[in-house]
Length: 76
Image (cartoon, rainbow, N blue to C red; front, side, top):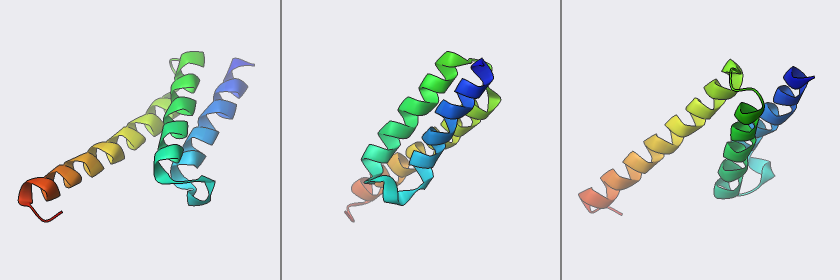
C-alpha cells in the first residue's frame, strides 16, 4: 500500500514541474516540491522521489545562478 501511495504523490510532483498548462512556473514549482517532499515523507527510501526532487532543485539552482550572473553583469 505504501508503495502505491508514494507513486500517487510522486508523479503529480513531477507533472507539476514539467506540464506548463498547470499554472505559472512559481505555482507549479511550489506544488512540485510539496508533492515530492510528501512522497519522501511517506517513503524515505524512494529513489524515484529523491531523483525527481534532486532534478528540480538542480534546475532551481541553475536558474538562481543565471539570474545572479545577469544582475552582477548589469544586463538585467
